[in-house]
Amino acid sequence: MTEKYVTAKISEVLPNPHRASICGGILHPEKVDVLKASMQKNGVWDGWPVRRNKDGRLEMVGSTHRQKAVRDIFGRDYVLRFQLVDYDDAEMLRGMIDENLAGAESKNLPVREQADYVTTVRDYLAKNPTCCNLTKRHEHGDLDCLQTFLGESWTIVRISTLLDIDLLAPGLGVSSDLKPSNVERLVKFPKAAQLEIAKVAGEDLGKRQLLRLLKATENDRKTVAQSSGKERDRAEKKLVEKVSQLAKRAVEQKKNPHLGLETVKVKFPSTMTKEEVVMAFFSLLSYEALKLAWKAQAAIYHPDRPNGDATKAATLNELWTRIRKLYGKDSTN
Image (cartoon, rainbow, N blue to C red; front, side, top):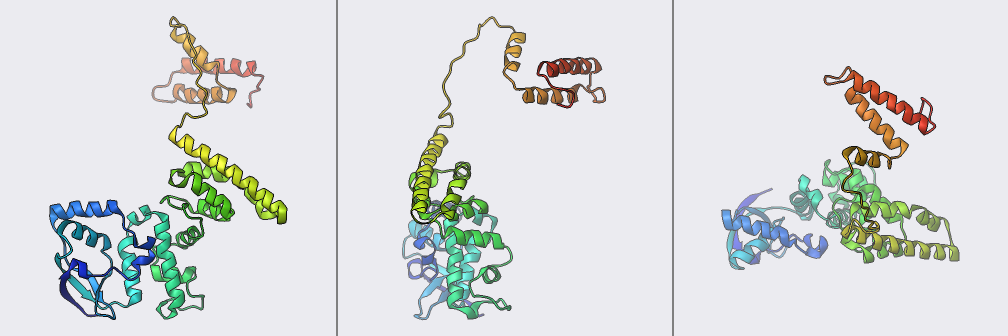
C-alpha cells in the first residue's frame, strides 16, 4: 500500500462510499458540536486518510463528522492536507468501521446504527466473497464470516443481536443498551405488536419498562405462535391491544413514577412519642420483614462482634421468641 499526501478543499472530498448505508448517511449533530468546540480551541488536525476513486475523486475513509465541523466553522473552501491511501472497497468499509466502532464508546451508539454497520458488511461480503478471509467452508455473510471481517472484539452474540435488530419494526431498537435477550424476545413478537410498541412508546419506553412489558405479554405471544387461522388472528389482536395498554401505561409511569399510587393522607397525633411511632411502624410489617430485622440486629449485638452486647442480644432473642409464638411459628420458621 503506497502512502502520500494531497491538499484539497474540504468540499471537494466525498464521504466513504459505504457511509450512505449507515442511517441513510445522517450525522449526529451533538458529535459535530463536540468536534467544533475542540477545533475552535485547538485548531484542525490534518492527515485524514482518503483515497482516489475510479473517477479520480477523493473519498474519505472516515472523518465525516469532522468534515461537517470544518465546513461549519471555516467554510466549504477550507484547504486541508490529507493522507492518500491505496484502499479498495473492502478496506474502505473496514476503515470506516474501525474508526466508528473500534472503541468502547461505540456501544453508546444507537443500536439501529450499529445494526446498519453489520448488515452493510453482511451484504457486502455476500456480493463480494473474495473479500472474505475465513478459510473454512461457509455461507458468505454468515456469523463466522462477519466476525472474521469485523475482528475478534466483535462477539457472535453482539453480531447476532444486531442482525436481529434489523428485523424489528421501525421505531424499535433505538436504545443503545438493549440486552440481547430483550431483542430476541422483541423479534418473536408479531410485526403488528412491534409497531404498536413503537407507535405508543418509541424512545420514551425505557429498558426496565420494556422488560416488564415483554414479560407481561410473553404468554400471549406464545399463544399467537401456537395458533393458526382465525384463532391466530384473534390471539394477535388481543396481544396488540394488551401491548398498547401496557406500553401507554409504561410511558406514563416513566414520566410520573408515582402514577397509580393512591394519595392517602394519614394523620398522626403530634404528641406521639418515639416509642409509639416505632410501635406503629413495626405493627405494619409482615412476619418475614420482622424476621429480617431480627437477623440483622442480632448480628450487630452478637457478643463475638467488636461492639457486641450480650445483654441486648439475649433480650432481642427473647422478644423474637415471643413474636414467633404470637404468629404461630415454630423454631424452624
